Length: 234
Image (tube, rainbow, N blue to C red; front, top):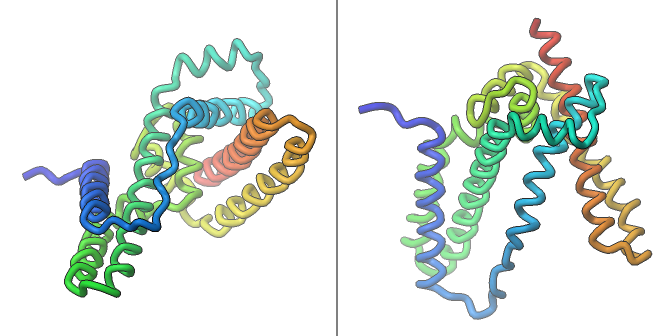
């Protein structure tokens, strides 16, 4: 019997978590819970496309090659598939992590009622977490961000890109953590500055500009980190 890949394991756990949460919500409905917030598909798709675009723009800007809008679009059209696959893989990992946390929260709530239900949920989370330790918990936020840069620069995608990123930044986790904190602080400062635009009636335009600038600066930092790690690795 062939060994399941990390992606296959992640998909199985994702579907299992979704099914368990769906069944539990129908078996024990909570009248105090507000209905889930709907996701605007256009905003969701735009957000992901802008992530890929900013990853491309930051990598070219770091190399001192500032393309025109037409050139940038042409480059993205030529090689967008691998970064898109990596982004989908990252979204899947994050979603499965969130699902496991939701199941843990369900176990904590069930502890006040049925002990057997709480034990079953907690046990399932432990088993799933152990099974996925090499797929989800092996990668930090830094690995995932550098993985996107790897996809853009080296043209590989998905799990391969994230693994490649992990090998590149091996031994430099603390520097990567500092970079993550720094980019988060910069994004927060941009949010406060552009948040003034809300008071000036700019509304969604200020929010979109904030998101684009934050992503560009974030990926510019991770692009610099990628090239530095690659240089040291030889």
